[in-house]
View 1 (cartoon, rainbow, N blue to C red):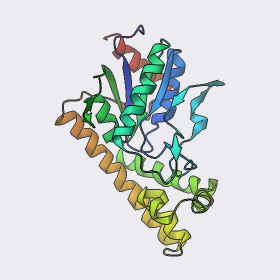
View 2: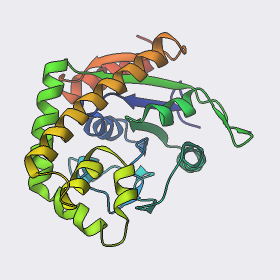
View 3: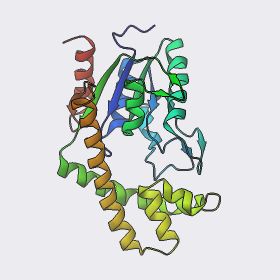
View 4: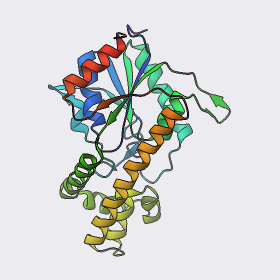
Length: 251
């Protein structure tokens, strides 16, 4: 058992809102927390740049923050929400058995909601978790700016080369199924899109994806009864951490 009034902290938000670095800073401050990724593409090995794993974010002040459910299956496999639930529960039990606090962090709304609402899947209903759920809010124009800047950076970091490597062992059809970066860069690698077409269409698709994420999170809060405490994503990590500490202390 941990010393906290909840057995889980959840950090959610749209893409480019800074969820992972904040979760890592929070875990570092708490000193006894580990992160469980709730991202539908970070589970795949070899899909690093396009899925935005940014593993350097898990190092804070020289300390490596433990993380789970990243690189747990091969690219090309079709991971699903039931498998996520099973993997989440295993990670949760492992973390809590060692007296640590799990922090679920990600932007895949279905995965997050399956835990918070204890979905019944495969005739199995997993235990309900008492979660403090934090949402990172980011103004639309700033979010769009960050998405565009991050897309340019990922292309420069080798996202096209990553997809070319994946195509050596994974069919184009399977990569396209993963959507967004893997869809449009694959189409570019196949010669079906020019570079400019790939870039423009992918940028638009990511903006649309972020909008859908926010629609899902609003539905969780407004229609499906999951309380979300929204925090301005642009605040310094120290300020966001303090807000979470206040919430944990009932202030």
